Amino acid sequence: FVMRLAAIEGGGTTWVVAISIDTPDNIIEREIITTDSNPIITLTTIKNWLLQRLPFDAIGIASFGPIDAKKSSPKYGYITSTPKPGWKDTNVVKLLGLFDELSSIPFLFDTDVNAPALAEYSLKRTTEISSSVYITVGTGVGVGLVINGKTVHGLVHPEGGHILVKQQIGDSFTGNCPFHQCCLEGMVGSTALALRKDI
Image 1 (cartoon, rainbow, N blue to C red):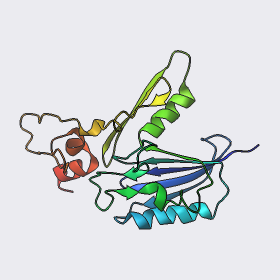
Image 2: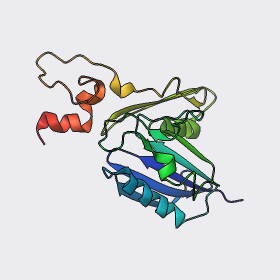
Image 3: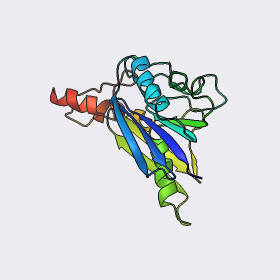
């Protein structure tokens, strides 16, 4: 039995969709799509790409957030209160066709930091390792956590990028996060760094 997997990673700048055979690291095809300000355009492009490459045994979706990753929630599969223009309250799994054209394929939806945290844990685990932390700095700042082999969600998922930080003495930049201004993401995300350097 040859397992055919599809993976989708959604970032603030680009989305990546890939197909692997048997193991997640055996990638046979990959496509990069620019994140449009209209999620319908981006996600329909990905859906059509997948439909042209059926069948799949499973699909994994890892998205920038905040997202609703709680399966029992009516908004499971949504990007929720994101600062990304045009993407607030986007039903990612519906727009990808996972309730329609691709509804027969099992899927999971999680953050773009929990998914790689789990992948690193799964690929590198030994009997001495029970947890993993994955931190990324890009358009935003993300923190993914795996404890005892499971990704951490809680009430929502951890938003490590929105931890409030103090400005250093002499730093006049007040941050660019629309929610908190002076949080970690608002101070060191790529947009913040570009604003700091006026580029």
